[in-house]
Amino acid sequence: MSAEHEVPIRDESIRLGQLLKLAGVVDDGAMARSVIELGEVLVDGSPEVRRGAQVRPGQSVTFAGETIRVVGGALP
Image (tube, rainbow, N blue to C red; front, top):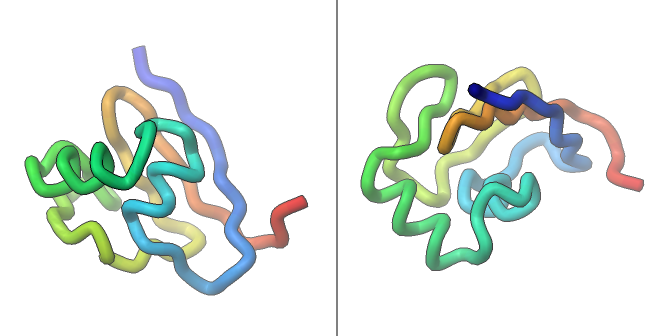
């Protein structure tokens, strides 16, 4: 079963590795790098293998059965 949730960002984009950490789907940057390089992370349905790829509001990221929708807006 997949889970879906929104993650707000305050800037116009966020690096993919940072987003995975912010969303809590990976423990640290090393894990983010590993799963991204293995092609296990999808951005808008396509594999993304660049940890520094920019993700913007309106895009979705899927990893390990979780879908993260990036939304604009300030973090609390």
